[in-house]
Length: 445
Ligand code: SF4
Ligand code: SF4
Image (cartoon, rainbow, N blue to C red; front, side, top):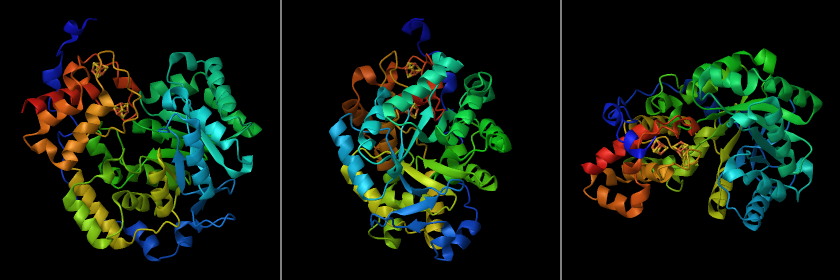
C-alpha cells in the first residue's frame, strides 16, 4: 500500500477520539483500607522488613510461598545503557545497597538486555540476586511450542543461569482472549512452563498484564489451576482510579481494581510504571507546590514511589534506572521506605483527580512500536507532547515552533499515514495514529 493510498484515511473521523476526549474530573473515593493500615505507623502492618545482612537499610518484602526476601525497589533493565561496564557499575551500586530483584526480557534493548544483565549479575553468588525474565513470544515464529522453547532456552544462556527466579508470560491482555489462546494456551506453552516450575528451572511463575481486562480476570480466576506466584501490573497514584479514563479502552481496568483482585486471590503484585513513564516526575507546578508544602525535601519521584510502596501486597516496584543519579535517589527513597500517611494519600488522590483532566498520552517511551515504516518517531512525538502539557507549552504560542525545533521534519506526526502497523505492538494499547492526528491538529492551531 502506498503512502498516498493511505494518506489521511480515516483521520478526520478519528479526530477527537484521542486520549483527551471524554476525560472528566472524578471524586476521590475514601482510602479507608489503606489509611487504616498506614495510620498504624507500623512497618510490620505493611509487610515491610528493613535491612539485610550487608547492613543496608533497604526495605524488603517476603514472597509468600518461598519466603524469599525481595527488595521493594526492583531494577528494571529495560532502559540500560548498552555498555557492559556502565551496567556493571549500576548493578554493583544496586547490589551494595540491597537491591536484589532484576527484571529483564528477551525483547528489551533490541535483544541486548538479558545478556548485559546476565553478565553483570554473574559476578555475584547466585543466591544473592533474583532475576526475572519473560516469554516475549510476540512474533508468530515464537508462538509454536518449539519456537517458544527456543526463546526460553536462550534466556538461560543469555542470563548464564540454570534456573530463573521469576518468569513471566510477557504482556498478556493485548489482543484479548484470542491472543492468549494463540500465545500460551492452544500450543500448551503454559502447561510446559508450569512443568518447568515443578522441575525447579522456574522458581516463580507469573504474568505481566496490559490491555484487555477479560484476560486478567480469566487468568486470576483460574488461579487454582495456575497457582500464580506473582502478577506484574501497572500501578501509580494516577492509574489507581484514572487508568480507564486515560487509556481510552473501555475494558481497561484501573489499578485499584487490579490490585484489589490480586489481593483477594492472595497473589502478590510486582509493579511497573510507578512513575507512569516519567510523567509523575513532572506534574504541573500547582500540584508540586502543594506537595512541597507537606514535604519540602521530597522529589516528585519519591512521592510516587512511596505511594506505591505503601501498599502491602506488593512484592517489588520496578524502576527502569539508566543512570547513577536516579539509582541513588531511588535507593534513598527505599532505604527505608516511609509509608504515606492519610494526609499524603488524600493529597495524591486530589492531584490524580486534577491530572486526569489533562489529556496526556500514556506512552512509556518503550519504543516497542518502532520502527515506523514512514519514519515517525513515535515515542519522541508523544514525549514532547506530554512534556508540553505538563509545562504549559501546549497552551502557549510557542508550541508549534518548539515542536519543529525538537522533532526533525521526517519524524513528525504529519508523516503518519495511518497504516496501523504500530498498533498491535503497543503494550499501552495507545491508538497511535489517532494521537498523531491529534498532534497534527494541535500544531495547526
Ligand atoms: S505511526 Fe503507526 S500508523 Fe502512523 S505511519 Fe507509523 S506505523 Fe503507521
Ligand atoms: S506508543 Fe506504545 S509502544 Fe510506542 S513507545 Fe509509546 S508506549 Fe511504547
